Amino acid sequence: MTRPALQVALDYTVLNPALDAARRLAGHVDIIEAGTLLCFACGMDAVRALRADHPGRTLVADLKVADAGETLAELAFDAGASWMTVICAAPLATMERALEVAKARGGDIQIELFGNWTLDDAREWYRLGLRQAIFHRGRDAQAAGQTWGQKDLDQLKALSDIGLEMSVTGGISPADLPLFRDISAKVFIAGRALYGAADPITAAATFQDAISAIWGE
Amino acid sequence: MTRPALQVALDYTVLNPALDAARRLAGHVDIIEAGTLLCFACGMDAVRALRADHPGRTLVADLKVADAGETLAELAFDAGASWMTVICAAPLATMERALEVAKARGGDIQIELFGNWTLDDAREWYRLGLRQAIFHRGRDAQAAGQTWGQKDLDQLKALSDIGLEMSVTGGISPADLPLFRDISAKVFIAGRALYGAADPITAAATFQDAISAIWGE
Image (cartoon, rainbow over all chains, first blue to last red):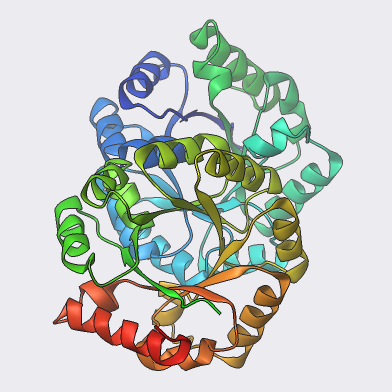
C-alpha cells in the first residue's frame, strides 16, 4: 500500500496568515488545501496565491460543490487547483461535469462525505470514474463530542473495498493513525492541529513519523 | 397566504457584471442573492459590495454550508447577508450553530435540499428552529433533462405541511408558477432567466405579474 500523504487544510478567514502558514509548513507536508472557509472569505485569489507560492505542489480547492460542477471546476482549476471537492449530496451530473473538467486539466475530483449517503451511491461514483473520497468527521460533530468509532472504520473499509482512495479528516491526531491501518488511506488531513500548534513543524514531523511507522517511508 | 417574493440569484464569476445586474433589477425583484459561484469567485467582497449598493434589501449568501456553521455564518452576516444557506447534508450541529449566529443578528438560515434527505430530517430541522428550506432542481439536473414532476410537488407539499416556508428554484418560468399554488411558497428564485433575458426588467415584471395573478398583490 502506498504511503498516505499529509495534507494541511488552511481554514483561515484572512489570506496572509494562511499564506504564511503554508510557507512555514510546505517543507513538512505533502499537500496544501485552500479550505472552504478561506475560499469563501477570499474567493479564488486564495487558490491563485497558494499556487503562485507552491508551483509544483498538489493543491486542493475544498469547494464542496453541490451544483454547477462544470463552472465551479473551471473556476478552481483555472485558479491553479490540482484537486477539487464535490459534496456527496450533489447530483451525479454535477460530479460528472466536474470530473470532465478536472481530467481535461490533469486534475482530480474528491467526493466529500456528509450526511446521508449509501454504499450504492459510492459504487455509482466509482462507476462514473471517481476514485477519491473524503471521510469527514465534521468540526461541529467533533465539538458535539462525536469520536472515531467502529462504525466510521467499517464505513471507511467498505468505501476502500469499492475501490475509492480515502482522505480522512476531522480532528485526527498521530495517535489515531493505527485505526486506519487496514483501509486504502491516501491522505490524512489536519488543519489547526498543524498550523495552530505551538510548533507547527514539529507537529507535522510527528504526523509524518506516525505515518512512516505504519506505512513505511 | 403571503405573496411569494421574487429573488434574483447572481451566478456570475466576476463581480462587476453581477453588481450591474443587481442595480438594473433591484427595483423589480424583492430579494438579491449572491450565488455560490459569485461567492467562490470573489469571496465575501461580493456580499459586501451588494450590501453597500442595496442597504435595506434582503440579501442571501448562498454558501451551502456543510461544516463550520458558526464561522461561516459570522463571515456571511458580517459581510452583510440577511439570510445564509446551509446544505441539508450538514450535521445538525452545523445548522444549530449557524442559526444561533443568524438569530443574534436578526438574520435567518435556509436549508438547501440536495441529494438524500428525508421528511424525518426536515422535522428535525423544524424542531431545531429552522423555518426555511430551498427546493432545488439543480442546474446539472436540469441540463440532464429532469423536469418538475408530481414527485417534486408532493415533496414540496410535505415540507410545507411540516411548517417550512419554501423557496423554489431551478429553471422556473412564470408558466410554472401555478404548480406551486398549494404549497407554502415564500420565494421563487431565478437567475439567468432574469439577468440573462434580452430585457431583464420585462422578464422580472412577467414573473411578478404571474405571482400576483395567483397570490394577489
